[in-house]
Image 1 (spheres, rainbow, N blue to C red):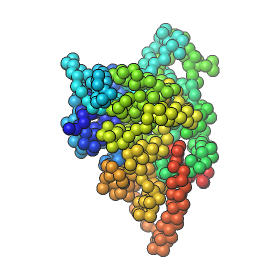
Image 2: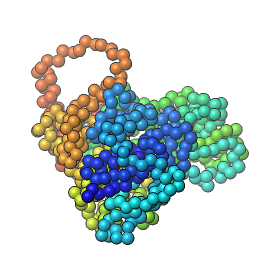
Image 3: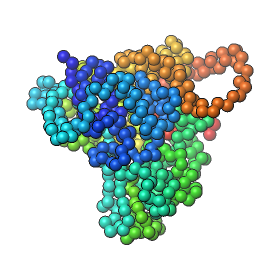
Image 4: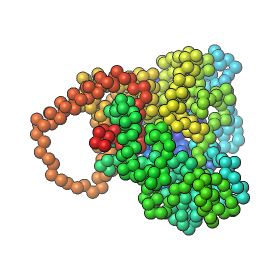
Length: 557
């Protein structure tokens, strides 16, 4: 009999979890509280309590090739950095292609997830749900996958802002923001310089009298457009880039910050943070520097207090007659339907083995999927988590003992806090490629680059020197996809296609056959040497970013 798996949430993580179950011959039932798929990427004119919300102008930070699922390349005609409506279109195509919709029960909210009384023997769970009409139902499942995300509970720290209770203007959390409508001619203060704060400041500045962007710690700001006008994360996310940073971490960070400041002097603009570039996910915003230089956005320090309609900052400066304050102060994370024992923390993070499995369960039949932060796109990370979890559920992959998992969690947490600027609002962060490689080893799908070099040099060059796209994890092992090689070799075609709205023809340079051969031989030799280093180091802590220039360019720095 097929094992029954409850999947909670039908956003990107939930959809790929359903597919992961189907790929392993499991029987998934997905519970989605709304009436549609998409999660965060389903725009709503009015925010709905308990659900993630986005604003009308949202453009995804990661490019389409980097955020795609590993066996479903995006349509070539879609733009590289998609509008939220196009992201939702991609998710709909994914759900339709793999026939995921019949496994989803819409307008059904999960109330509680409890271990059955015989859990030690069966590993089963009781899942209680409630329909929109208020009808409750309890069903038994062999496993549970939690895919509810972490942008549903706004963090509004009003106690940190004296005088806010008597503020004469309007204030709200960025979760409530949909568009700049109604803010025409207003004086607006945005508190917080994460990606939402930056986006909202830019969006509002197009219609407001003035926008003041208040930041306590500053941030590194990068754009989506990289060298040559290509998507920045595509040209800066190869395994070679990661190797360079692994070998020369301090130098790579220094040179990258130097490059960033050549384009945008962060100190001059009042943006420079205390942390290094790689310590925290940067603000991805193409327009913020232009709004600052034009005076439409003014960067200010942290707010000290509110006095009537005035906002006083910690440097003593005051802005009078403020109409609206937007708190872009992040989110709290919680899983109210789970037993409290499963929500234990190690530092700021949840106590989860490899950010997926609670270590204390006698049977590893509950997994958290998609609760992760990284310099790369979340979809490939969630997909790999789901592929691993479903194989554990099926008994094809075993976990270490509870003691060993706890030791690794503590070790991983200490290393993470030393490397990244974690906090209550940013409880965890992982290195993109090393984390994917770590999980892919558990699944048995990590690409063997040295062997690939001898077997298929053309593909090996793309895998090592090209962008680390998710298709690499479908080349071998369980879930191998016959189209993975072609997807990798044609990924640049899909990157270039959206630009071909007006083709400019130029005479091609004459490259002789011998020149081509010399280039191939040179690259092959260089790649072989790099692969040897790559295989030796095992990459315990290298990175891949969706928001920084190619490390290879640093040599020109």
